[in-house]
Image 1 (cartoon, rainbow, N blue to C red):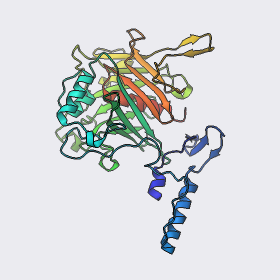
Image 2 (image 1 turned 180 degrees about the vertical axis):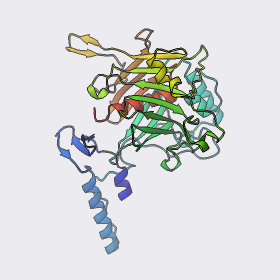
Image 3 (image 1 turned 60 degrees about the vertical axis):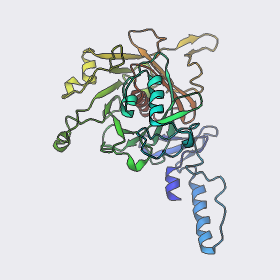
Image 4 (image 1 turned 45 degrees about the horizontal axis):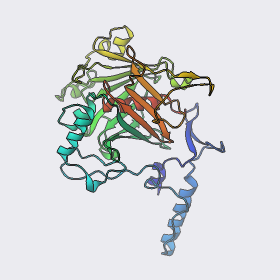
Length: 377
């Protein structure tokens, strides 16, 4: 019961906030009631007392009325399919385990969808898409009363089927933020240090959480000596984001987003800097953009009828949020959107992308938006 209570999502109508001192509290969006205790604490306390009474009397008692458990809150996620399938992905809502595709079938589906010819899962999900139509995905947010939370990323591979791709977990670090990204939903199989086979990348920020970088699962050139000698390639830098004016100040347009440039076949420039001066962040600051693409936030237009700035999300955003974002190449047409993020439910956000973004980069940028706008709607 205690474990379920600690993992329980926030009930509908309640939002988690953080005080200037770092303490977590909850606000009801309708009544504006504030609580320093999780809204479900009382229900779990009653469930505990009833179970204790059940043990003492030997008579089964019903669970506390309305008590929420991880299996009854939020979007249900099917268990990971078994077998020797290297694409052993959890089917999302709408994709049953019994109807799961074979290795070869799923590979062809992803290749056709992404417009690439990579043969293994990590490459298909971490290398840029090479398609004209955007890939439709979504992020499911699982808030945690202990802080951090978890994020699951799904790709729509057909009209009715959604394929699980990644899970990200925020870890406690002394400075800035740290998200580990894995191909496995099992907490026990994810590794902050990146030693697990399912580990695919990580997002790190500076101490003010204004500059973020996405790395793959390679070796940190500045890491410990034993890490350098483990024989793997140096890590790649896949994405850099600089919030010139943070989303906390409600100005999402003031950001710099940089990704490696792709050739006509969708192959990205390999960036494995061995020194800080060669990182994407430092290069972009001094204007050295060779092999890089700078993305710009699409600006809304003034609507005199509604008396507000508006931006068409083509139905992919149905709720107002500072996390609703569209990106396009800075030197290209504003209508050529490469990334779109739109809120559709309290904890569900649509994410659409195409080249030069990869599936991994799209998810990482969504994580960065979540982190930089934490506490906002």
